[in-house]
Each structure stands twice: as structure tokens, then as C-alpha cells.
Image (cartoon, rainbow over all chains, first blue to last red; front, side, top):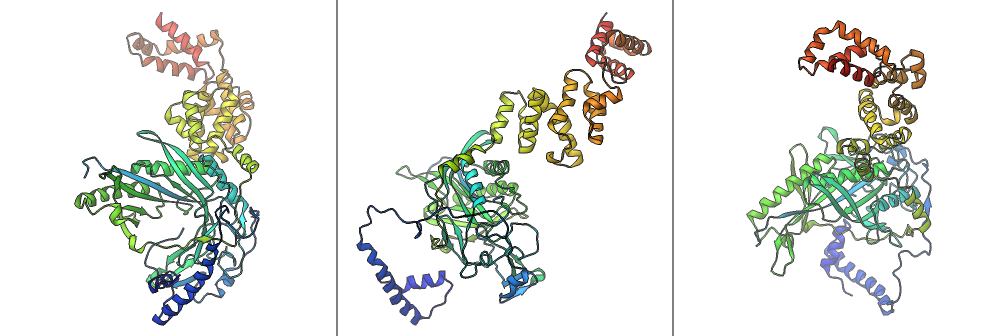
Length: 100
Length: 491
């Protein structure tokens, strides 16, 4: 299953990785080899098999809603490349898009 | 092209924080307005090698909300990773439920100025909130991040595109909030960011040759944080879609332009484009390997179902239909669950829902407003207050004495209504001969007013009533005073 260089570039963009033309070349053959390997699974007949949601045969692992101590702000910020008072400091974001 | 009037077709995504003490996958506290980055740990900071574990309380609250919305709980719900890069999301993915959500296919009944409407619910699912990104003050060329909110349990509720106008959108969001607060699922304080609404707006512009409905391109307005802005933003978008469609009926269609994401500037009252279809995200969802699925236990679910109280709408209708309350009074008395509970307890104690409602509306609510307190801070239990109501109902004291004298003393001293009436000698008299003597006295000293009444001035009766009550120091039974006065003046 060959991956086009366009597809590799897209994956690179989604992963925020800048790729050189040589890397695109290299990764497209490497990624294709991985996909080919996984593709072997198709040889199995899975018609009657329920899709698996998790590799472990357990469910409903829950935690009580009780606070536990975390890190102090100093510790939390300790490994950050940049901080500003009690905040992490990051490059200015202009796009007002938010998560969730 | 169809000549039919375009029909606004709106679906809403609502996010709400669940009322838990800790985060979704770690034991960090959920708190607002605390020191930045003080409620964080390796799990919510997205450090390598950590293991998230689901908060059981968050799951319970989510199930509660899903059941109250009439959703079905599929046999299994699973977690997925939703990938995107943004500084408020330290893991670079959000844990969410993608293709197997907690609850599906419910509905919410709402009451609009145009009458009742039922809005379908497509799905209810759990996820985690992101952190807060702020621009540095003083115009520095950087932003700052507070990750206290990261990992806060978030419930997302997605409606069917059943909403057809701005008012409906607002009422839907308000009703959802009321329900969540009622159920104790969330506080939904919009100023604190505990609830956010994202309407998806499109206009249905007739049908194509095959009879399939055609739509204008869907626009999603992100993160509206007040009910007013929901209504304003939807009103604005409907008008904008109409204009764009009229300017370019062939090109401004969902087929050609797809979906876009827009922001809302509340101060200017306008929406603005954030992201068009071409930039749409590819979230590369895949099953979260660190979390096991949720398989609802039937018995556990039924236990949660049993603890769901009567919903506000059901209580409201019952007060209108069974107790004969006005729409307005019923609305006020059921808007807050604790007020509704207080009224219900009072009504049960005095065995009259309507009488209880009158006292609630005229006395209790007024005291709450004057003192700016919540019903939970009202010093009298429904039973203590009910004793006062009963004293009036059984004509031991009159309404005015209860309100002006006894109630303030109950609030000030904590004594019971009965004690105060006894101590102050406030019990009213229905002794006809005593009252008749008072009335005679009043008529003698106010002969002019009595003449006015006989001459046709009906309002004079009220003045004579007032004078008689005053002469009795408020103790005369007003019904008896009224009867005697009427007899004497009528004769």
C-alpha cells in the first residue's frame, strides 16, 4: 500500500513536523511498509468478530472523586521552556480558536 | 430555486462542567479563580508515562443528565483521542468519546413564546476541558497559559437541528442549564465558563429537483458565554445567511461551501470567520489505549434513575393545572429547585398549594430579594413558616398582623409564630359584640366618610375598614368587621 508524498506531507502538517523532500521520500516508503505489514490483518476473516474497544478484557475502572495533591506551580513550571509569573509562556496565538 | 421562505435550521452543541470535586482523569481539584497552575499534576499536564483513571462521580453525573434527557445508554461507551495542537492542550490530544458516546437519542421539552417545542438530542458524551489561554497584558508578543482547567470533566450535549429561531436557541440553552442545575449535575455559571454554547446555523432554502432539501453553508459560532449572546448571535447569523443567499442563490449553498467556524464579538454584535472548510481539522481520532470502556450496569443505572427529582417543567405544569397557579407564579416557584422544594414542603404542611404559593410570592421571595439571600439561607423552615400561615388560615391572626408584626419578629428572634402571638397578645378577636362596639365608635367619629359611602362613594368603605382595624389594634377579624360594617352602612 503505497503512500503518496502528498499524504505524507499532510500527516507532517497535522503533526506539526516540517519535512524536507528527502524525508518525504524516505517516510513514504517507511510508512508504506508499516501499512503493508498491518494490512496482513485483512487476510483474516473477521465477519463474525465484534470490534474490540480495548485490548484488556476489563471495563468500568473508576476512581473516587477525592482530591489528591498535585504539583506546586513552581514545580509545574519548572520544566517549561518559558514562563511568566505563575503562567506558562507560549508564542502569541492570534487565532481565537479554542479546544473542547 | 424555490420561492418558499428560508427556514432557519439550527442545532446546538452545549458544553458544561460537571459538579465534581476533582478532574476527569486525575485527583487535581476543580476550582475557579485560584492561583494559576496550582491545580495541576503530571496527568493533566500531559507528562509521558502517566495513567489517566476515570472519575466515577463524573460518570454518575453524566449518566444522570443523559437519563433526564431521555437518552438511551448503549451497551458500551469508549474513549478516544482527538488530536490537535494548541497551547491550552498539553497532551496534544483531548480525551473524548467519538463514535460510541455515553447516551444517544433523547429530547428536551422547552416552552417558547410561540408555545411548547420538543428538541431532539443526538448524543451526550463525556470529555475533558482544555486550559485557558490569555494574551499577555501590555501587548507583549506572547500568550500565557493556565492549565488549572485542563482535564475538568465536561459534558457535551448535541441537539438535532430542530431549533428554528434565535429565541428557541436561547430558551433551549436556558432550559438545559435549568435542568443541569436542578439535577445537581453542574452549576453552569456562564461567567465562570462552566457552560458554553455553540449553535450551528443554516437556512433551509427549498428543495432540489429530486425533492431533497437544500441549505445555506453551515456556520458554527464558537464559545458563546451568555444566553443573550446566543440569541443575538443566532439572530445575526440568520440575517447574514439570508443576505448572502439573496446575493448569490446559486453559490451560497452547503454543497458548494460546506461548513465554517465563526467567532462572536459581543461588543460589536457581529460574527467573524475563523476557519473555513478548507482549513477544517483532521483530528485523527483513535481509541484511547490508556482507558478501558464503560459498560453500564443495569442496576446502577436504575438506581441513578430513581434519584432523579421531578423536573422543573413537570412541577411547573402541576402547579398550573392542579393547584391553579398563574403561569407567572408557577414559573417563579419552579425556576430554582430549592425554592420549588421549599414551596412543596410548605404546601404539604399547610395542605394548600395555592395559599402556600401566595405566601411564597408575597413574603418569602420579597425577603430573599430584600436581604439578597438564597432560599437555603432563609432562616425559617417550611414548617416554622407554615405555622404562621396556619394561624392566618384559621383566623387566629389576620394577614396584616402576620406580615407586619409576627414574621419580622420570627426572623429576628427565632421564636415560633405561636409564641410571638401569645406573648404579644396578638390573637385576633371574632367577638361580634366587641367588634360592633368598635365599628360604632368609628362610624360616629367618621360620620362624613360614612355619608360619602351612602352617597355612592364606594371607596369610602375601605377607609372605614381601615379605621376599624386600626381602632382594634389590628386584632379584629377583618371578615367580621367587614360584615358588620356592611350591615350598618347598608341599612
